[in-house]
Structure formats: structure tokens, C-alpha cells
Length: 637
Image (cartoon, rainbow, N blue to C red):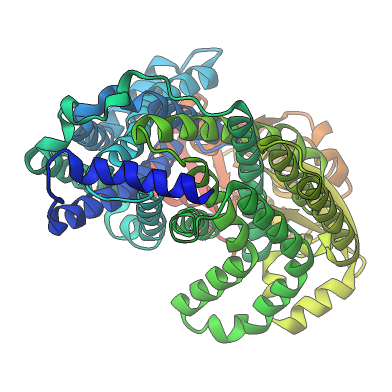
């Protein structure tokens, strides 16, 4: 940004903040408004998490459901940002409607559950029908959430001077970072999912009421700057560069989630910590633009340097984590702090740089609500494309280290697209991507990701496990990864960062055999969580008919690779393997069983906890024949 641009921008914002009323707004009004903005950000992102948990518990948490919810939120928020300026007088109503919808959703979840599995119980397209309902349920609140940030920015432009959007973006995302931690580590644990949703909804209502009664002057249409009806145009190359960088950002975030699962385990808290750092990065990047006038080009350069660091520093960070794990694990919050610190060292740099991109492009501020809405829409659409590129191709076909190089390549293209071709800038981008490739070849250790998260619980364990690793057979689906890991001449079953028992262990077949002993008759059995197939195969050999339900597509596509250990389950008569979430299958089927075995992982792990709830046990009871038996186990974390 040039000095003339900066001074012109400062003059324009001064006229907005002071010129209309003839005096500077009282400081307390600005502070209260900032608190409302923080609370709105606090509430906005919480619904993506909470609605995902509510709908996951109702209809399952398999990839199709999770993807539908995420993509609908991204698209809905994008559309909301694009059309936000048309709702200028109604920010108070938007906040109130978001809160009311949340409270209704929480209160009506029981009725919704009954309706879904009554209306679609016999539909051949049951899953797709349920996905359609999911999209319909979250699209409207996502749209409303998307409208709030540009409108808050527009309102703030009448209260303060300077780079308004960077201030608003920082405060909003700071609120989002706080709520991610609060939801995972406090709100749900104290109030439950429904209670937490109601509490967040009440906060939205309070924000809406305060805006209505205390900020009437800001919502008057006469208060909107004179350029309201004029077209807001950004150079196409700027919008194109933002879309490309947003694609890179989405791929980066999803890749870091997978790296975090491999290092810390597939826990919900791992996802929460990574998401927290993403939002902290957005807030910090906006602050850098505000105080240091960081340019878009410089932000992209920082992304490339950050990716270079991750490629070379991941092994070192994993060793640091393993070295300090034993001491930190003596206190739960110390361990959380250690995980957060290691992740921050790894990814906070690129997260901050990604966060600076949108604020760096808003240099005119003729109409903040419309300008920010347009760029936020472009960014959301780029995120959608990035998500699809990652899950439909990159994750399934490339190593995680190579994906980092792909992120660097997307970022370099964004830099090239942003402005007129400058030899030094294009050359530097190419050089940095080249360095990422070189560093990956010399320092990246993909094998570390398949040792299992418990291997990082001490430096000694890590060194021993790494030395024993012999070979990997890796098979990936859009979200999940399954691998047969050979260590010390033994095959281990690996899934999403978790290594279960040795495949030739007697324990899993024993579970199937002992469970069958207590069944009233060997006619029909249900196994929830097929995994290696060892338990389900034994049950299949003892029962006339056995249904095995498995949520992980990568696992379900590869039982033949473990036929030496699962009695070649694919060729056992009467065994049927079903790709589904256990909750959705149990609620949606009419079948009844003499034996139901739950062999999924410990409730500590991602997506497993819902199978240990009273609601689920009630559903399971309905699927048992008289005198039928339900068997469950929980492996240690």
C-alpha cells in the first residue's frame, strides 16, 4: 500500500467516523460494540460445531454427513457475506434470528429424530434424503451467520477510524478461537450438546437486543455512505488470487487435522486445538495488516516460509512432544498446553499469513460491508473448492508431506495471479516451492505418521517404534486412512492415528467367541465396527447370519488384505458388511438380533463417544430379540 493510498484511506474513514454526527462517538459505545462483535464471533463458529454434533448424533457421523454439513456452512456463510449489505438495517434481527433458531434446534432435536427415522425409514434413498434434510436445516443459520461479519464491519466504520475491517476481522475471529476451546473443554462437558446450544443462542439474543436498543442510529439507511448504490469492483486478479489462496488454506487446514490426529490421536480435542489456532491466526493476521500494513504479497510469502518450516520441522516438533509428554501428562491441562504449543510452533505462522489475506486486499473502504462481503464470499467459495480437492483427490492419492508441497504450489500461483508479473516475486515464489521440495526429500519422515499416537508418549518409545518400523500398506478414503503397519515382524492395524491390537492377536476373535456363548440362539448377530474383521468373522462362523457395520470406507474396502487373520470374512456364508454409521443403521433398520456386539474404539476417540450414550443404548435395546444380548468393550486410550 502506498503512502498516498494510506493517507486517502485515513481521510475517508475519518469522514465516516466523525463527519456525519459532527463529533466523535463516545468511547464506551465503541467498547460495547466491540464486545458485541466479539460475542457474535464467539457464537457464530460455535454453531458449525454444535449443529454438526447434534446432527451427527441423530443420523450418524460418516463422511457424507460431515461433508454435507461443512460444505453447507461454507456455502451458506459465503452467500450471506455476499448479500449482507442488503440487510443493513436488520443486524439486530439477524443476531436474534440466529439465537432463536439455535434454541429451536436444540429443543426440537428429539422430535426431529423421530420424524427422520419415521419419514425415511423405508426409503431406498434414505441417506440422501437425510442429507437433504441436513442441508435444509443448516443452510438458513449459515446464511444468517455469514451476514453478520460484513454488517458489523459496516457499523464499526461509523464508530472508529483507520482500517476498520482488519479490526473487526481480528475481534470476530478472536471470539471464534475462544469458543472452540470453550465448547470442547467446558460447555459440552458441563451443559451437554443441547444445553450448550441453548446457552449460545441466548447470547445471540442478547447481542440482538443490545443492537436494537442501543445502536439505533447505526442502522438507519441515511447513515450509509453516499457510494451505496455504486458498483464495488475489485481487480479480477486480486479476487482470483484470493480464491487460489483460499483453496490453499482449506487444504492446509485439513492436512494439519490429519497430521494432528497422527501425532496426538483422533480425539475431538485435537480438532478443537487446530481449529483454535486457525482462528487465532486469522485474528493475528488481521492485526498485522492493521498495525504493520502487511500486503497481500507479503502474506503469501509468509505462507510459503511457514510451509517450508513445517516440511523441515515436523520431525523435530514430534520429538519435542515425545520428550515432554511424560511430565506434561501428570496434569491434564499441562498436556493440553503442550499439544497447543507444539501445534502453534508448527502451524501458527502460515495460519497468521492466511488470516492477513482478506484485510490486506481492502484498501479503499468506500463501503466496508459490501467490500468485505464480496471478498469473504470469494474466500468461502475458494474454501469449498479446497475442501473438495483435498477429500476427492489429494488425501486419497498423495502422502501428507506431498500435500504440503501442493499447498505451497497453490500459494505460489496466488502470488503470481495477484499482480502484474514481476520477475523477482515470481522467481522467489518458485524458489520457495523448490526449497519445500528439497526439504521434504531430506527431512520429512512420512513413516512417523503411522506409528500410532501412543508412540509419541516418550522419546524412548518413539525411537524404539521408529527403529522397528519395517513397511507400510496405506489405503485412504476421502476422510479416513487405514494401514497395515509391519513392526518387529508383526502386522498392526492402524486407523487415523490409532494403532489397535496386532492383527494375529487372539483377543479380538475371543471377544466374538465369548459373546456368542451368551447369545440365546445362533440365528442372527450384529457387529458394530468391523475393523480388521477378526471379531465379526468369528461371529459369522458361529451364527446363521451376521451383519457387520463399519463407518470407515477405507477399512471396508480392504478386508481381503487381512484374510490371513480374519478367516477370509468376505467368503464366510451369511456375513454381510455394511458401510454406515452405527447410529443411523440401528435407528433405521427393522431387523432384530439375538446378539449385538459393539467393538468400536474407546469413547475418547473421534465419533465413538456417541455409541456410549443412554440414547444409543435405548436404540440398541429396540433391535434386540427377547433375551437378546448386547456386548460392548472399551479399549484404553
